[in-house]
Image 1 (cartoon, rainbow, N blue to C red):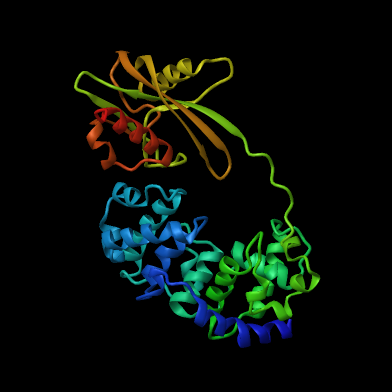
Image 2 (cartoon, rainbow, N blue to C red; image 1 turned 135 degrees about the vertical axis):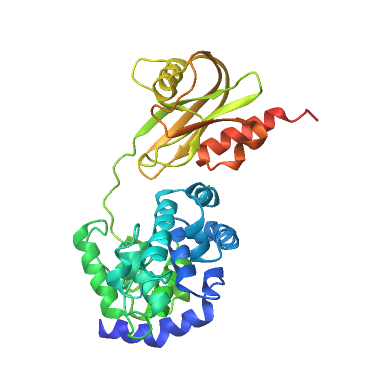
Length: 362
Protein backbone atom coordinates (compact mmCIF):
# COMPACT_ATOMS: atom_id res chain seq x y z
CA UNK A 1 0.00 0.00 0.00
CA UNK A 2 2.80 2.46 0.88
CA UNK A 3 4.53 1.90 -2.46
CA UNK A 4 1.27 2.47 -4.34
CA UNK A 5 0.49 5.58 -2.31
CA UNK A 6 3.92 7.04 -3.11
CA UNK A 7 3.29 6.37 -6.81
CA UNK A 8 -0.03 8.19 -6.61
CA UNK A 9 1.69 11.36 -5.41
CA UNK A 10 4.82 11.02 -7.55
CA UNK A 11 3.37 9.67 -10.81
CA UNK A 12 -0.43 9.73 -10.99
CA UNK A 13 -1.14 13.34 -9.95
CA UNK A 14 1.54 14.85 -12.23
CA UNK A 15 0.28 12.63 -15.08
CA UNK A 16 -3.25 13.96 -14.55
CA UNK A 17 -2.07 17.57 -14.59
CA UNK A 18 -0.64 17.03 -18.07
CA UNK A 19 -3.14 14.56 -19.55
CA UNK A 20 -6.55 15.57 -18.24
CA UNK A 21 -9.22 15.99 -20.89
CA UNK A 22 -10.91 19.34 -21.45
CA UNK A 23 -14.40 19.27 -19.94
CA UNK A 24 -16.73 22.24 -19.47
CA UNK A 25 -17.37 21.55 -15.77
CA UNK A 26 -13.63 21.76 -15.09
CA UNK A 27 -13.81 25.44 -16.05
CA UNK A 28 -15.32 28.02 -13.73
CA UNK A 29 -15.75 25.32 -11.09
CA UNK A 30 -18.53 26.13 -8.62
CA UNK A 31 -20.51 23.84 -6.29
CA UNK A 32 -23.53 24.23 -8.58
CA UNK A 33 -21.65 23.24 -11.73
CA UNK A 34 -19.92 20.35 -9.96
CA UNK A 35 -23.25 19.04 -8.65
CA UNK A 36 -25.02 19.19 -12.02
CA UNK A 37 -22.12 17.53 -13.84
CA UNK A 38 -21.81 14.74 -11.27
CA UNK A 39 -25.52 13.90 -11.49
CA UNK A 40 -25.35 13.90 -15.28
CA UNK A 41 -22.26 11.69 -15.28
CA UNK A 42 -23.91 8.98 -13.20
CA UNK A 43 -24.33 5.97 -15.53
CA UNK A 44 -23.67 8.17 -18.59
CA UNK A 45 -20.52 8.59 -20.70
CA UNK A 46 -18.60 11.88 -20.70
CA UNK A 47 -19.03 12.45 -24.45
CA UNK A 48 -22.81 12.14 -24.09
CA UNK A 49 -22.95 14.49 -21.11
CA UNK A 50 -21.00 17.46 -22.52
CA UNK A 51 -23.72 18.83 -24.88
CA UNK A 52 -26.39 18.27 -22.22
CA UNK A 53 -24.32 20.06 -19.59
CA UNK A 54 -23.71 23.06 -21.86
CA UNK A 55 -27.38 23.26 -22.81
CA UNK A 56 -28.50 22.89 -19.20
CA UNK A 57 -26.13 25.62 -17.99
CA UNK A 58 -27.36 27.96 -20.70
CA UNK A 59 -30.98 27.43 -19.63
CA UNK A 60 -30.32 27.26 -15.87
CA UNK A 61 -27.10 29.23 -15.20
CA UNK A 62 -27.65 29.31 -11.44
CA UNK A 63 -29.22 27.27 -8.68
CA UNK A 64 -31.78 30.05 -8.25
CA UNK A 65 -32.93 29.77 -11.88
CA UNK A 66 -33.20 25.99 -11.55
CA UNK A 67 -35.28 26.23 -8.37
CA UNK A 68 -37.64 28.71 -10.04
CA UNK A 69 -38.29 26.47 -13.06
CA UNK A 70 -41.13 23.97 -13.40
CA UNK A 71 -40.38 20.25 -13.23
CA UNK A 72 -41.53 19.94 -16.84
CA UNK A 73 -38.94 22.52 -17.96
CA UNK A 74 -36.20 20.61 -16.12
CA UNK A 75 -37.27 17.28 -17.61
CA UNK A 76 -37.30 18.82 -21.09
CA UNK A 77 -33.68 19.94 -20.70
CA UNK A 78 -32.82 16.46 -19.40
CA UNK A 79 -34.69 14.73 -22.25
CA UNK A 80 -32.61 11.91 -23.76
CA UNK A 81 -30.14 11.56 -20.86
CA UNK A 82 -32.17 8.81 -19.18
CA UNK A 83 -32.53 7.93 -15.49
CA UNK A 84 -35.01 10.77 -15.11
CA UNK A 85 -35.23 10.47 -11.33
CA UNK A 86 -31.90 12.34 -11.38
CA UNK A 87 -33.60 15.35 -12.96
CA UNK A 88 -36.52 15.25 -10.53
CA UNK A 89 -34.10 14.96 -7.60
CA UNK A 90 -31.91 17.87 -8.69
CA UNK A 91 -34.97 20.06 -9.14
CA UNK A 92 -36.19 19.14 -5.65
CA UNK A 93 -32.70 19.71 -4.24
CA UNK A 94 -32.49 23.17 -5.81
CA UNK A 95 -35.71 24.11 -4.03
CA UNK A 96 -34.46 22.69 -0.71
CA UNK A 97 -31.18 24.61 -0.93
CA UNK A 98 -33.05 27.78 -1.84
CA UNK A 99 -35.57 27.41 0.99
CA UNK A 100 -33.46 25.85 3.75
CA UNK A 101 -29.86 26.89 3.02
CA UNK A 102 -30.36 30.46 1.75
CA UNK A 103 -29.40 29.39 -1.74
CA UNK A 104 -25.92 28.20 -0.74
CA UNK A 105 -24.83 24.64 -1.38
CA UNK A 106 -24.08 22.79 1.90
CA UNK A 107 -20.35 22.42 2.60
CA UNK A 108 -20.20 19.34 4.85
CA UNK A 109 -20.50 15.68 3.87
CA UNK A 110 -23.17 15.20 6.54
CA UNK A 111 -25.38 17.87 4.97
CA UNK A 112 -24.65 16.99 1.33
CA UNK A 113 -25.66 13.33 1.69
CA UNK A 114 -29.06 14.33 3.08
CA UNK A 115 -30.06 15.95 -0.22
CA UNK A 116 -32.38 14.02 -2.59
CA UNK A 117 -30.63 11.69 -5.03
CA UNK A 118 -27.20 12.11 -3.46
CA UNK A 119 -25.47 9.00 -2.15
CA UNK A 120 -21.97 8.31 -0.87
CA UNK A 121 -20.29 8.55 -4.31
CA UNK A 122 -21.88 11.89 -5.24
CA UNK A 123 -21.21 13.24 -1.75
CA UNK A 124 -17.51 12.41 -2.11
CA UNK A 125 -17.37 13.87 -5.61
CA UNK A 126 -19.07 17.15 -4.69
CA UNK A 127 -17.26 17.42 -1.36
CA UNK A 128 -13.81 16.87 -2.85
CA UNK A 129 -14.21 18.86 -6.08
CA UNK A 130 -16.22 21.79 -4.75
CA UNK A 131 -14.99 22.08 -1.15
CA UNK A 132 -11.70 20.12 -1.11
CA UNK A 133 -12.98 17.71 1.54
CA UNK A 134 -10.77 14.64 2.00
CA UNK A 135 -13.28 12.17 0.53
CA UNK A 136 -12.41 9.42 -1.97
CA UNK A 137 -14.87 8.42 -4.70
CA UNK A 138 -15.59 4.87 -5.81
CA UNK A 139 -17.13 4.52 -9.26
CA UNK A 140 -16.72 1.92 -12.00
CA UNK A 141 -13.48 3.40 -13.30
CA UNK A 142 -11.94 3.62 -9.83
CA UNK A 143 -13.02 0.07 -9.01
CA UNK A 144 -11.27 -1.19 -12.15
CA UNK A 145 -8.06 0.73 -11.38
CA UNK A 146 -7.96 -0.44 -7.76
CA UNK A 147 -8.77 -4.05 -8.69
CA UNK A 148 -5.82 -4.15 -11.07
CA UNK A 149 -3.43 -2.28 -8.80
CA UNK A 150 -3.96 -4.82 -6.03
CA UNK A 151 -4.95 -7.88 -8.17
CA UNK A 152 -8.17 -7.96 -6.18
CA UNK A 153 -9.94 -11.31 -6.56
CA UNK A 154 -13.31 -10.82 -4.84
CA UNK A 155 -16.53 -10.21 -6.77
CA UNK A 156 -16.57 -6.41 -7.09
CA UNK A 157 -20.36 -6.36 -7.30
CA UNK A 158 -20.60 -7.60 -3.68
CA UNK A 159 -21.06 -5.22 -0.75
CA UNK A 160 -18.03 -6.73 1.01
CA UNK A 161 -15.81 -5.91 -1.98
CA UNK A 162 -17.16 -2.39 -2.33
CA UNK A 163 -16.39 -1.68 1.33
CA UNK A 164 -12.86 -3.03 0.98
CA UNK A 165 -12.23 -1.12 -2.27
CA UNK A 166 -13.55 2.06 -0.65
CA UNK A 167 -11.01 1.53 2.11
CA UNK A 168 -8.26 1.14 -0.51
CA UNK A 169 -9.32 4.44 -2.09
CA UNK A 170 -9.45 6.14 1.32
CA UNK A 171 -5.95 4.87 2.15
CA UNK A 172 -4.49 6.09 -1.17
CA UNK A 173 -6.09 9.54 -0.96
CA UNK A 174 -3.57 12.36 -0.88
CA UNK A 175 -4.75 14.68 1.88
CA UNK A 176 -5.48 18.16 0.65
CA UNK A 177 -5.50 16.90 -2.95
CA UNK A 178 -8.78 14.97 -2.87
CA UNK A 179 -10.27 16.61 -5.95
CA UNK A 180 -7.19 15.99 -8.09
CA UNK A 181 -6.81 12.46 -6.70
CA UNK A 182 -10.41 11.52 -7.50
CA UNK A 183 -10.32 13.01 -10.99
CA UNK A 184 -6.95 11.40 -11.68
CA UNK A 185 -8.21 7.94 -10.68
CA UNK A 186 -11.34 8.31 -12.79
CA UNK A 187 -9.39 9.73 -15.73
CA UNK A 188 -6.92 6.87 -15.56
CA UNK A 189 -9.76 4.35 -15.72
CA UNK A 190 -11.54 6.18 -18.52
CA UNK A 191 -8.56 6.75 -20.82
CA UNK A 192 -5.77 4.26 -19.97
CA UNK A 193 -6.90 1.45 -17.67
CA UNK A 194 -9.63 0.44 -20.12
CA UNK A 195 -11.91 -2.58 -19.62
CA UNK A 196 -10.78 -4.62 -22.64
CA UNK A 197 -7.55 -3.10 -23.97
CA UNK A 198 -5.69 -1.44 -21.10
CA UNK A 199 -2.85 0.79 -22.26
CA UNK A 200 -0.36 -0.42 -19.66
CA UNK A 201 2.63 1.05 -21.47
CA UNK A 202 1.11 4.53 -21.04
CA UNK A 203 0.06 4.04 -17.42
CA UNK A 204 1.84 6.08 -14.73
CA UNK A 205 1.01 3.35 -12.19
CA UNK A 206 2.25 0.32 -14.15
CA UNK A 207 5.38 0.01 -12.02
CA UNK A 208 3.33 -0.76 -8.89
CA UNK A 209 0.36 -2.53 -10.52
CA UNK A 210 0.01 -6.22 -9.60
CA UNK A 211 -2.45 -6.78 -12.45
CA UNK A 212 0.16 -5.54 -14.93
CA UNK A 213 2.84 -7.59 -13.21
CA UNK A 214 0.70 -10.73 -13.61
CA UNK A 215 0.53 -10.22 -17.36
CA UNK A 216 -3.26 -10.61 -17.22
CA UNK A 217 -4.65 -7.19 -16.22
CA UNK A 218 -8.01 -7.93 -17.87
CA UNK A 219 -8.60 -10.71 -15.32
CA UNK A 220 -9.53 -7.84 -13.01
CA UNK A 221 -11.96 -6.70 -11.82
CA UNK A 222 -13.63 -10.00 -10.99
CA UNK A 223 -17.40 -9.88 -11.52
CA UNK A 224 -20.06 -12.52 -11.03
CA UNK A 225 -22.16 -13.09 -14.17
CA UNK A 226 -25.13 -10.77 -14.51
CA UNK A 227 -28.59 -12.23 -14.29
CA UNK A 228 -30.51 -12.42 -17.54
CA UNK A 229 -32.32 -9.16 -18.18
CA UNK A 230 -36.09 -9.57 -18.67
CA UNK A 231 -37.68 -8.54 -21.96
CA UNK A 232 -41.13 -6.97 -22.23
CA UNK A 233 -43.42 -6.21 -25.15
CA UNK A 234 -45.41 -2.99 -25.08
CA UNK A 235 -48.23 -1.64 -27.20
CA UNK A 236 -48.74 2.09 -27.71
CA UNK A 237 -51.25 4.19 -29.62
CA UNK A 238 -51.02 7.36 -31.65
CA UNK A 239 -54.64 8.40 -31.16
CA UNK A 240 -55.74 11.09 -33.62
CA UNK A 241 -58.85 13.28 -33.82
CA UNK A 242 -60.58 15.20 -36.59
CA UNK A 243 -58.45 18.28 -35.94
CA UNK A 244 -55.32 16.34 -36.79
CA UNK A 245 -54.22 16.36 -33.15
CA UNK A 246 -52.51 13.52 -31.28
CA UNK A 247 -53.29 12.34 -27.75
CA UNK A 248 -50.37 12.17 -25.30
CA UNK A 249 -50.45 11.23 -21.62
CA UNK A 250 -48.20 12.23 -18.72
CA UNK A 251 -46.75 9.50 -16.51
CA UNK A 252 -47.39 9.79 -12.79
CA UNK A 253 -44.46 11.15 -10.75
CA UNK A 254 -44.22 7.97 -8.68
CA UNK A 255 -43.92 5.73 -11.77
CA UNK A 256 -40.81 4.93 -13.79
CA UNK A 257 -40.07 7.89 -16.12
CA UNK A 258 -42.36 9.93 -13.87
CA UNK A 259 -43.39 13.33 -15.21
CA UNK A 260 -42.53 12.47 -18.81
CA UNK A 261 -45.12 12.40 -21.59
CA UNK A 262 -45.82 9.38 -23.77
CA UNK A 263 -48.04 7.83 -26.38
CA UNK A 264 -50.45 5.92 -24.13
CA UNK A 265 -50.20 2.17 -23.87
CA UNK A 266 -48.64 -0.53 -21.73
CA UNK A 267 -47.31 -4.02 -21.31
CA UNK A 268 -48.77 -6.88 -23.33
CA UNK A 269 -50.36 -9.61 -21.23
CA UNK A 270 -50.26 -13.34 -21.90
CA UNK A 271 -52.72 -14.48 -24.56
CA UNK A 272 -53.60 -11.10 -26.05
CA UNK A 273 -52.63 -9.62 -29.39
CA UNK A 274 -50.78 -6.32 -29.46
CA UNK A 275 -53.95 -4.62 -30.75
CA UNK A 276 -55.95 -6.06 -27.82
CA UNK A 277 -53.22 -4.88 -25.46
CA UNK A 278 -53.40 -1.32 -26.80
CA UNK A 279 -57.20 -1.22 -26.56
CA UNK A 280 -57.19 -2.55 -22.99
CA UNK A 281 -54.44 -0.21 -21.83
CA UNK A 282 -56.15 2.92 -23.17
CA UNK A 283 -59.41 1.95 -21.53
CA UNK A 284 -57.61 1.44 -18.19
CA UNK A 285 -55.39 4.51 -18.50
CA UNK A 286 -57.72 7.07 -20.06
CA UNK A 287 -61.21 5.55 -19.99
CA UNK A 288 -61.65 5.49 -23.76
CA UNK A 289 -62.67 2.76 -26.21
CA UNK A 290 -60.54 2.87 -29.34
CA UNK A 291 -60.29 1.27 -32.74
CA UNK A 292 -56.70 0.28 -33.48
CA UNK A 293 -55.66 1.09 -37.04
CA UNK A 294 -52.47 0.95 -39.10
CA UNK A 295 -49.07 0.02 -37.76
CA UNK A 296 -46.59 2.91 -37.40
CA UNK A 297 -43.29 1.74 -35.87
CA UNK A 298 -41.63 -0.77 -33.54
CA UNK A 299 -39.09 0.77 -31.17
CA UNK A 300 -36.52 -1.37 -29.35
CA UNK A 301 -34.84 0.10 -26.29
CA UNK A 302 -32.68 -1.13 -23.41
CA UNK A 303 -33.15 0.13 -19.86
CA UNK A 304 -30.93 -0.69 -16.89
CA UNK A 305 -33.02 -3.64 -15.69
CA UNK A 306 -34.94 -4.79 -18.77
CA UNK A 307 -35.21 -4.53 -22.54
CA UNK A 308 -38.36 -3.45 -24.35
CA UNK A 309 -39.92 -3.47 -27.78
CA UNK A 310 -42.80 -1.06 -28.26
CA UNK A 311 -45.22 -1.68 -31.13
CA UNK A 312 -46.98 1.55 -32.03
CA UNK A 313 -50.23 1.80 -34.02
CA UNK A 314 -52.53 4.60 -35.09
CA UNK A 315 -55.93 4.60 -33.37
CA UNK A 316 -59.17 6.55 -33.12
CA UNK A 317 -61.67 6.90 -30.30
CA UNK A 318 -64.93 4.95 -30.75
CA UNK A 319 -66.51 6.11 -27.47
CA UNK A 320 -65.67 7.97 -24.30
CA UNK A 321 -63.66 11.07 -23.53
CA UNK A 322 -60.09 10.91 -22.20
CA UNK A 323 -59.66 11.42 -18.48
CA UNK A 324 -56.52 10.79 -16.35
CA UNK A 325 -57.30 7.48 -14.61
CA UNK A 326 -53.88 5.78 -14.54
CA UNK A 327 -51.88 8.76 -15.73
CA UNK A 328 -51.22 12.24 -14.37
CA UNK A 329 -52.56 14.31 -17.23
CA UNK A 330 -53.27 14.27 -20.97
CA UNK A 331 -53.18 16.70 -23.90
CA UNK A 332 -54.24 16.88 -27.54
CA UNK A 333 -51.41 18.38 -29.59
CA UNK A 334 -50.59 19.04 -33.21
CA UNK A 335 -47.68 16.92 -34.40
CA UNK A 336 -45.66 20.12 -34.88
CA UNK A 337 -46.13 20.91 -31.17
CA UNK A 338 -45.30 17.50 -29.70
CA UNK A 339 -41.66 18.33 -28.96
CA UNK A 340 -42.63 21.11 -26.57
CA UNK A 341 -43.06 18.42 -23.91
CA UNK A 342 -40.43 16.04 -22.44
CA UNK A 343 -40.47 12.37 -23.54
CA UNK A 344 -38.39 9.23 -23.13
CA UNK A 345 -36.14 8.12 -25.99
CA UNK A 346 -38.63 5.46 -27.11
CA UNK A 347 -41.40 8.03 -27.60
CA UNK A 348 -39.01 10.43 -29.32
CA UNK A 349 -38.47 7.76 -31.98
CA UNK A 350 -42.23 7.66 -32.51
CA UNK A 351 -42.28 11.46 -32.93
CA UNK A 352 -39.45 11.16 -35.47
CA UNK A 353 -41.53 8.65 -37.45
CA UNK A 354 -44.64 10.85 -37.28
CA UNK A 355 -42.70 13.87 -38.52
CA UNK A 356 -41.11 11.86 -41.33
CA UNK A 357 -44.52 10.59 -42.44
CA UNK A 358 -45.63 14.19 -42.98
CA UNK A 359 -42.71 15.16 -45.21
CA UNK A 360 -43.53 15.29 -48.91
CA UNK A 361 -41.75 12.67 -51.05
CA UNK A 362 -38.65 13.89 -52.89
